[in-house]
Length: 493
Image (cartoon, rainbow, N blue to C red; front, side, top):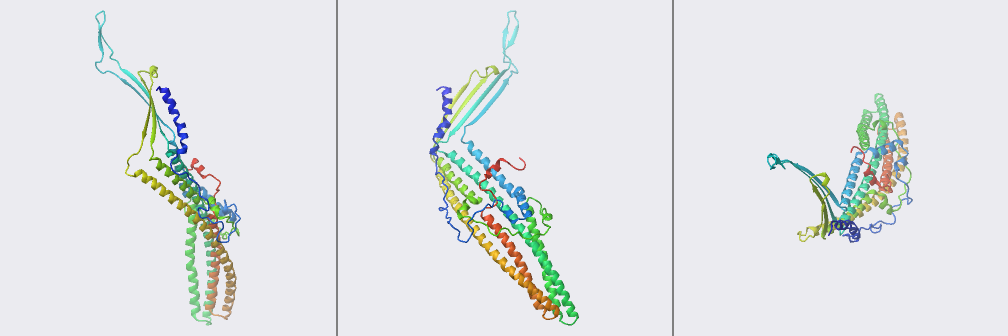
């Protein structure tokens, strides 16, 4: 067989491999339907069926500070930087897997020269009797080589490996989106907490001012001999208890602000100046459309990541099964050597080689790898189905939590109004001597409790609304390809 014929046959190898694509080992992955995953047609709780655009849900709260913080976190959060690095790693793993589908080429070259240091020449006597030495000079040598090797993917093991790497790469893109959603909702939750603590501080300081006034009245009445010192001591104790709660609220406020700072990629005190100006707890819209349960398969990035992991583990079954089948490798080489550049390509030698290998005995290792891959796929399917059910659970719990917070807010508003009226009447009666301090203290405590309860209910409502947006998969664009971020690395190379 001539070298040209061997090269022509080598070039036909990729075509033959393509024709064998239908012989890929292992099962072909097929996406599961909503019914197979146990997704019901309707929610078990009352929820608005009309879906809406929740890509930038935080803007629905109409709070420019909240919007600024969430979008700043999306651009600078360090957890997102880590997720992006993992995404870039997954992309390079895909490149590595694809490389197995192509031949490998390597070149070599060498050059050398040898010189005789002593002797090595031939003595020649010239006609005139002179003796001279010839042939004692050095010699040069040059050589070039080109080697090629290609393993035919007869049974699709390499293609299955590429399929698995691609699915893992796509899963990493959805993992990035999941981290993005977590960061956005965490910033919003801590922002609501910070505003709630500001409201609680205002309530505590207002109550402290009233209790200072009550203590003064009690002291005057004791001096006037109208009441015993018991009233004064009760007033002093109530004031101290209210004052003792203020440092704790301040500590909680500082923790919430520090968390926001770190989430936005700053030192703990980075956003304190931005939040110094007191603003009300953001309320958000009155209703959020949950759509239909099947939407979670598309809207939730964690669910889509689990689905891609299932696809990857399914492809790994084919990778493992291909190891049980014959492996065919073709290699070739071209070589040339000469004593100078001018004659370097005068003589070229080449070779074409083929080899086949088949596992005969490995103590059950390869069979165990196939069974292990199948078990991994079964586990991935269970994880995928679990992620779907957990997503449905998150949504329904958030719907109920929102409804509960709204009802508590309505009731606490009534309680606050009634308690405020009772406290005003009790305070006026105590000044006039028509009631005792115990009655006044009871009404003041009820007012404090109702006021704080109203703040907490408003905070809970905003938090439940954030949880619902998060459970629905709000905060990212499901139509976007987040794997494209892997080609645009942030930071240093």
